[in-house]
Every structure is written in structure tokens, then in C-alpha cells.
Image 1 (tube, helix red, strand yellow):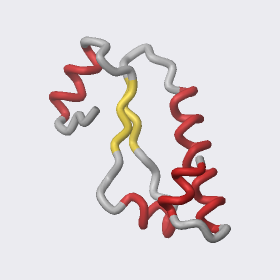
Image 2 (cartoon, helix red, strand yellow):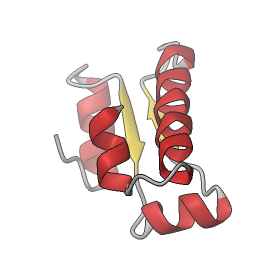
Image 3 (tube, rainbow, N blue to C red):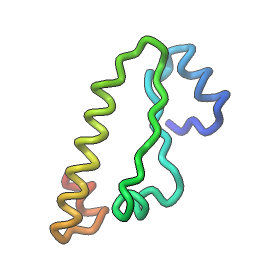
Length: 80
């Protein structure tokens, strides 16, 4: 689901359509591998985002390991 404006994010969080929104900036793929650029997570008030955060971190670490082992990012994502 693409939620692209702050108003849409707040509305979807308010109506519990989503509990967490991950903002992925343009150029994230290159910036992440070069500079470890973090993602932004926006959560519904009262929602414990620990699980979401740990799953995203685990995914990114796994992709990075496979990429550093020689896979393209697309191949690494597919494997993970």
C-alpha cells in the first residue's frame, strides 16, 4: 500500500488501516549500502513497534550480507 502524504499517513494510522508506516527515501538502496542510511518508521500511538523494527532490521542485514557475498541486491532480496 502506498501512503505518500503526511495527511494520508495520519488518516490511515487513525483508522487503524495500518499500524506502522515505513518511509523509504529515494536512492535508499545505494545510500543504505554506502552509508547505512536508516529508514523512518511512523507508528500508531500505543502500537509497540519493536517487532516491526526488528523484522525490518533483520531483513536489511540479511540482504546486506548476501549482497556483500556477491549477489545483486535483487537476488539478495529474492533469497531473503
